[in-house]
Length: 161
Image (cartoon, rainbow, N blue to C red; front, top):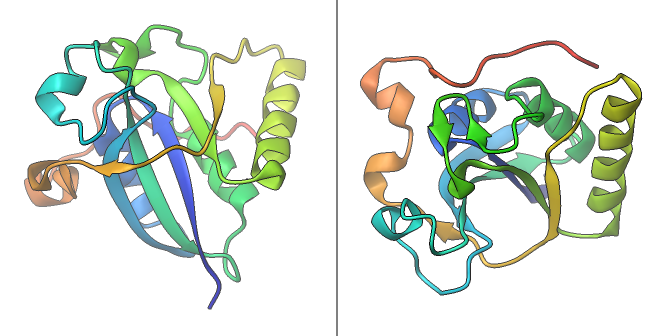
């Protein structure tokens, strides 16, 4: 088994985690924070919008079963990648759309998907960032919808590709 990790920010990490948890080839989806300017952020500080962190989900997957491209397509098809100020009703810099890529291949795949979406007349707001440290969110954020027996309020699946 070839285990890899991918990092996606698409608004509230609860919904992002929900859609990746049961996706083929995904081993785990963990909520956390990336991209800010100080180590070991917590939810309270990230919510101020002052830390620069985004809510991100670390997706651990078996690359023999699913490709990074398939995961990236799932990412784009489960949130509004055109929204510039957050995601759904969640407004703020911590809720922006982004992919943190591990290498040039992931960057190239992400750029190609964004180019394809632009050619389909979408105005893509998703940013691409080089990999930075991932900080796992507090326990009460993990598996949120599964534990509360609810479904996401600001994420839904929409076939695009």
